Length: 72
Image 1 (cartoon, rainbow, N blue to C red):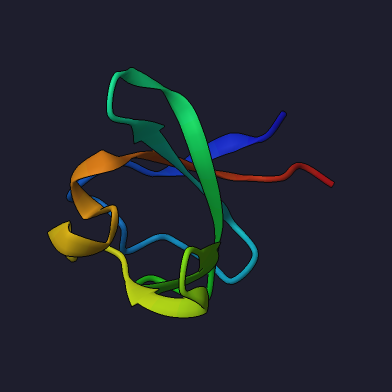
Image 2 (cartoon, rainbow, N blue to C red):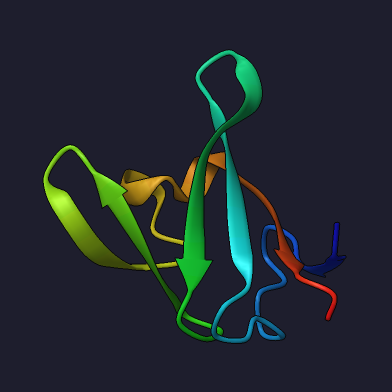
C-alpha cells in the first residue's frame, strides 16, 4: 500500500521514511531501502548498513524501480 513518491530520474519528492524498491538481476523486487530525503537512502547490504546516494549506479542505482510513501 502507499503511493508512488519517486521513479528513476525523478527523486526530488522523496521524503524521509519513503521505501525504495530495487530489482534483482533477473527482474522482480529483491531489495528494499529507506529514504533519508531526496538524495540519499539507507540500506543493509553485504558490507553492513550504508548511506547511499539515490542515483549512484554502482550502488543499486541502475536497479531502482520506484519509491512508495506509506499511507497513514
